[in-house]
Image 1: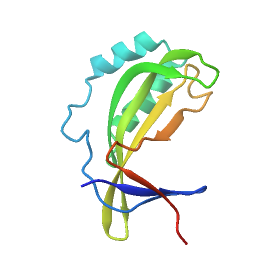
Image 2: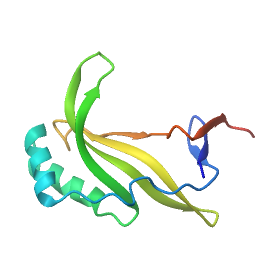
Image 3: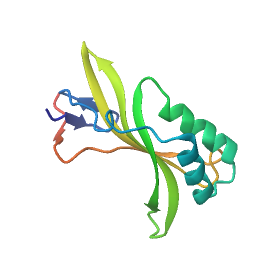
Image 4: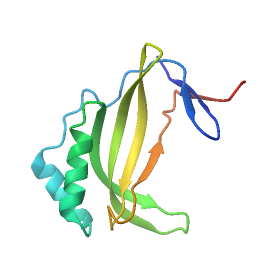
Length: 130
């Protein structure tokens, strides 16, 4: 089943339920996480490690870690750590799995992460109706 959501200037409304795409994937080991952190070379490794572990081990999310190029608006790119997957929310008796990406910038937590809702190819985006 696909998720249909409505984007407005202030919020997103998800209208149907979908299964998370990362539920069956294995969580990264502590060694895998450490290797990615070393490769990304963030300024505050301990705080980045803490926040990544918090996201991966959260009871309301199914997040995995990757290191990938992030492309900034000015045309530059940098390999950053990214938590990607779904967060779960309950709304009006239904459970929704919202696909997200959270990119940890080099100076995290002094510079906030970049967070995005990432619609999948089978999601339908419609305008808000009042």
